[in-house]
Image (cartoon, rainbow, N blue to C red; front, side, top):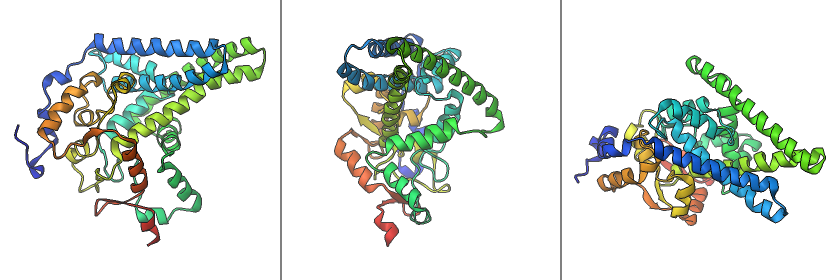
Length: 349
């Protein structure tokens, strides 16, 4: 297959190498994934409620967090309108699957589909893991610098995603564009009502079993709060490894192009099959950015076509711990004009 010269390449050229079959949505396949995840999640939650031993509870709570992340990935596909071939069903499923992760469906579509996908790795536009410059870091106060150092460290995905994505773009986001305001307000009320209903049920079960308020609060904590925090770390880390590595260049507004953002700005990370079983091929991320019409269950086929056509521009490799650790040491500050990552030492020079 002939590879186009980088200067002549457009995003349409990349999309055109992906077989049309990769964009075929399947309601039976999408529903099968949803039912499987809901059944597993229900089984884990039931196990936590009925657990006779503390050690079993300690095993089940992280599994609950993983299942919240798994359902969120399917909800993410539904928000793109590709989980099934029925758009109305996608909306229903997406809102349902987002409840355990406390995400507002229409707010996610605006922030993720429109902004993140529309301006991937573009300065001042893509808000997800957006780097700061040396001058911006120097202008920070002591607490802001400390926060930056924590959020861009090995332990950063949880506090970063919790603050920057979930809180700022989901919960505290009060002034969306006018055409989105009504839909976001409606979904906000729906989510809050669902979370209140679930929390009330959890408190009732905890109080019934323990006979006191502490038991009710502990039931809410182990069924909802801790799994949510585990999910937050997992998804924050997932987004980080998708887009942050010394190989990925961020661009100025004028220097950015669609193909630079969607082909060059993300990764294909090969994971053990058991990981894909729970995370629905989300780490095969480049084809998802190239064409959002590709369902999660067809990403591998699309990745083969893209990697074969553009081997020099596709980051396709196994995900290794040392690669992630190297990125957290290297990727601290950014020079948008030179297109290079810098360490904190650059701010002291």
